[in-house]
Image (cartoon, rainbow, N blue to C red; front, side, top):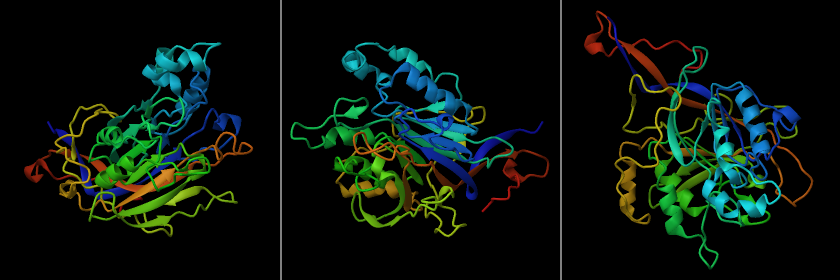
Length: 380
């Protein structure tokens, strides 16, 4: 009898369309705030609600559940306070004094919905639809952002008001080095993080960690006015080094066109210089499709000072990870108190991802390793 195992091909890639939203704060396609373009994957980078009430979250889960995507990846944000159980136990009474919420019931809204809900965890995703790209990627998702006011999923600041780097560095060190897509509610410092309220509102420790990981795509929100996209080319001389940044011009601005970020090189922009290389390339047969593993640790990583030049060792075997596309997908265009409510459209990212394939052991196939991948018009 023939047998098969699942492998990934770093050389064979196909275009995968990822639709990104964040900071919907109760707005949805159902109430006409924005339209969802077609795609393979939907990512929501947090702030699903205004104050994390059960009714707010239920409405958001319902529209995400009904959205037509093969995989839907969701994280919470600082406004989704009931999803941060420890925070809600300590502060929920002050926020919901008239109508206390059941935090466990709010979290259970994501159970058996077909939504991949990530709370500072990673997952291996494999798109298996015969009509889809049949690509695979590792995603890490985290709801955390630096403390600004009394909100959920925040990491503390020092009494002086400067972020406690040791806390932030420990937190972000848990992003796996082999993450291909990173979804965080807050942005990294210096990229899509300009705020009229806070100035530069991103996290420096997150920027250093993304320099180490260098994922193909980093999706965030939180800073409404920072909505947009940039391609960062990483340097190697010291942690956090950037060689250049290319800002995206939104083709949908002032028109009915999609807000498309094309990283495939097919539509004007240069192809993203990132081969998503890493030592791991095999998905074990029989593992659960779309979310086969969750982890809050970094396998085999040596802990060192972030400013130690030995950190460059994390590049070994991953030299092809040279660029990261950063997307702030905030739907709410303005922060609270900064003018009339206005909505952005989702940002659509086309990116070439590795194809997974099933290798068959058949008579005449040497060493049981030969395979004929399925044909697809977007192969590259």
